[in-house]
Image (cartoon, rainbow, N blue to C red; front, side, top):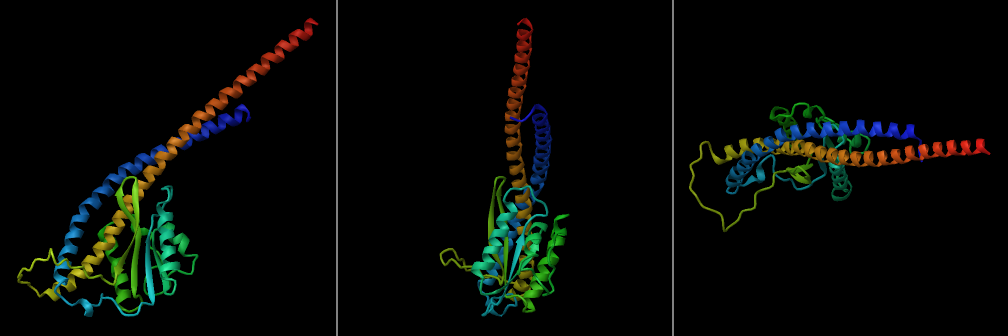
Length: 293
């Protein structure tokens, strides 16, 4: 059994760690509320924009659109969205694993590059063969999390769209954590480019005669870039909220574990202290008996 001084030092260390994890939990809880509100406010707008685009594109031939699907796919870009900081459980690792799985399995026969949004993804992929090179795209975008906003997300989406229209990329996949609730983040891999035509439901389709100003073609041409920017921004908002939810959960568990460890260390300390006192009493009694003899 460790001596009393070692146990006291461990108790002090665990107390200090517990204070840090508890503080981080409270900070993440405060930030989560704002991030969750941003996600909640964005989703209705994003869904309505997609609905309008689907209704318009249903009656149009999008095969000639510059964001339409191409015949031969050679170059694939995976956009891996992680955080800049850790201590959030498997939040970042799950995205990295999914991006690697896509690169090595689903697109093993393609030329795959990974665009990292967040320091954790960049730290991993900059050392692999999937590190992005050229194509007029940044190698990583860590600063986007410093003050997340649509104005910061839109230029990133524009660069990806420009690379696609220039023919440098044939397909773009977003990999991020979809925010479901505080304790649950779902790793999602969704197609960003080319645009996927909405599946029409014949039973629910309603034929209405609208007058469009300007034409339907012009409206779709302006809506598609806006929709793609919103899609990327929504993924970033989901990931941002999911990060704080995952960190809050992880710090809550860490605090509970530290409290349990602290309780066990105090029991061990009391046992060691009692054993030391007993040994001292035995030595005193033994010395007294020796003097009598």
